[in-house]
Image (cartoon, rainbow, N blue to C red; front, top):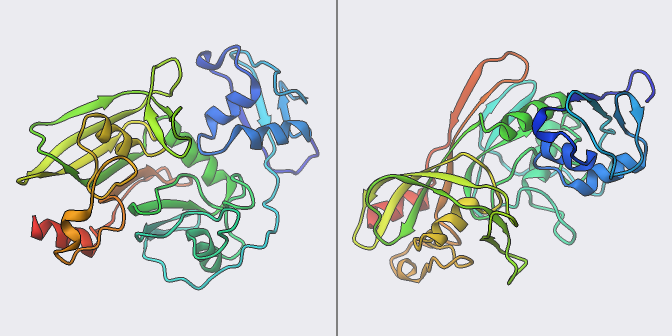
Length: 312
């Protein structure tokens, strides 16, 4: 690799001994696809022990140093848009945004406007990390379109790699609030692996451990109502749709989550439009990448959620 180019070095730990290099990197950057790293490998941007590798099947060994060069984000026809942002925290490395219901996090083919990325591109200009590629600058983790609440956006690649490592090591405090169908008594956890549903590729599902990734959700009951329960969820892992899938798995789907069985019909007639799952990413706690200070940010419940609690 040429001198002066930004790069990240990682030492291979015992848990990755013998792993394919593309899988190793995807394990480090948990929100980045293996396809992205396979492209970097093919372009000569990955080294093992400072020697360029060009095969995804190359294996790493414990103690190896893997070097990856992340190219600058390419320009793309995603326009910055002056969309108001509810910024809960901001410094030179990152910002935390309270995402509203209905906003998609990043663009996708055929959906290139109105997203969180469009909004932060306007707010931050060119100061966004490029690790996640041209469609997702700054995005280190995601929440669903109809889930509200806190999400971190990174302004540079060093901060992105640091926050991604914290997420991978389960040291980021991610606490959600939600209303589920049915009555739950007591606190507990769901420890059940999750993967793409074999019956419907648009959905995730609890599967056999040999086919899915470990997923752990801790839950606490905050209030019991006649037919519903107001709950707090703390993520130990962060799989796609994790809370929604786990609660449906124990037969208490999130209210309003029609994909996983939580009907919203009862409350439309009372003037509260649920528009998808009643789930809110309330708390994000993390170590600031440059200062080492612990930062904890809380997003207030949205108005519709408060109204629904009052009805219940």
